Image (tube, rainbow, N blue to C red; front, side, top):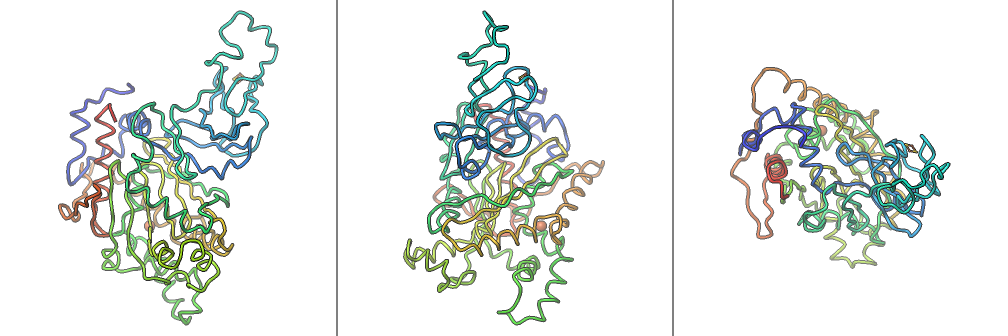
Amino acid sequence: MLTEISNTELDALVERDRVHKRVYTDPAIFDLEMERLWGRAWVFVGHESQVPKSGDYFSTSIGTQGVIMTRDKSNNINVLFNRCSHKGAQLVGDDAGHVAQFRCPYHGYVFETDGILAHIPQEAGYQGSDFCKGKKESNIRQVPRMQIYRGFVFASLTADGDELETWLGPTISSFDNILDRSPLGEIEICGGRLRYLHDANWKILLENVSDNMHAPVTHQSAYQPARMVGENFKPEDKPLEIEMLERFGSSYEVADSANYITSRYGHCYADGAITSGSSHDEKSKYVSGLIEVHGLKKTREILNMSRQNTIIYPSIAFKSTMQTIRVYRPLAVDKTIQETWTYKLKGAPEELFEDSIRYNQLVFSPSSIAAHDDYEAYHRIQHGLQTQGLEWVSQHRNLDEDISNSDGTRKSSGTSEMTFRNEFQAWQEYMLDERV
Ligand code: FES
Ligand SMILES: [Fe+2]
């Protein structure tokens, strides 16, 4: 236990229509989140395609714990703590690479890619001690649980709890949709990680993903010029970049018409069906490849499933239509790393991946003319909440308008704050109930 905050005190921070600002600003709450929420949830680590060959590794974090995803000699995936078993030095930096074995940069102890201690310099000095090859405690420690769903690697710092697929619940269909869009049923993460450090709490970044009320205001300076430029083109000649930016100015009515679906543990997805063929011509090479695999009816279903945003709480959000993934890595109560990744649909034409890169650069990168609007908003929220202004943060919009579905999910309009309320329901469940 890191801090003394009673369950009664924690419980009082989340009400049905508002949350107390302390959940975003109190360092003691952040420490408790790392222990109870990020320490218990399944957290996205990476994708198998990032470590395709034996000896490949990929370094990231689970909450504030540094971890390494590796592919070992037996071709198995491991998630290891990034901590040498000798005196604790990190084995690798925040990067990816390929090794025959890990050699600690401090005293040179060598470990296999599954964490087993392989070599100690001047080993005779350990004779008769408890630190030696063959002893479990001398190996790099594996994260207690690791499970993979169709190539997506998740790990948990807690040994017990729901299996990954149960925990993902109905939102698992968003992963299926990602893979169904590939004629080979597989994806490959490519194109590097765009990484930003934000002066804001991780929950502020995550809430922004399903906040459809902000775009027409926050991104006005991006979509208005795009519309003006767009008037100079016939619809069929309009550059993709202009189309992408114009969408930020969709009306509140359009935003409302999308549905948000929430499920247990804070997950949600946008379920706005688009009309068949509006994003891909059925005669295109890509769609005919899909039709060969799935048939016309199923292909239409796959492409019409427009998961503009899916959030797997608390660590990942993705857009299956734009082949982009956002990964959240909290560092402190007011510091969060956000990474944006792109992926290829295996078997699909290269142009789809090129569009994904263009979208990532246009909407998420430092050179974006839309991303910095959000980035400024994150900082402003964090700084506003730190003032002695009001104590509470509103989540009142469309309260009591959720519709319960038979599979346990709930549905509301695209501008409802149901998604935030659902995230905080999960937050309470993790933070209060030690059995989660
Ligand atoms: S800390 Fe790694 S070898 Fe000493
Ligand atoms: Fe935004």
